[in-house]
Length: 88
Image (cartoon, rainbow, N blue to C red; front, top):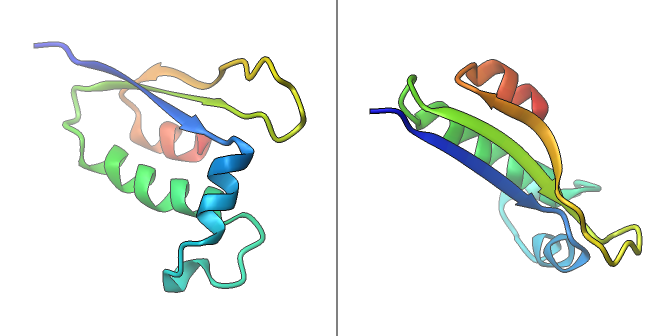
């Protein structure tokens, strides 16, 4: 059975503001708590999926005032977990 998943990360201003409200210890004083959350929890998810899964990482944001919020491919489909985590 082949499984292919795309993980789409929301870097919008509303998500950034919501991440600032998280009071978990590792986030205290971080300039970009949303990035820390993604690296921690998405990284954990990537490590937990079965080795035969192919994953891609994609992101969108509107922090720069771009109302189009295009999706950007951070890492195309791969089963290499190290490559995926490094793309975070």
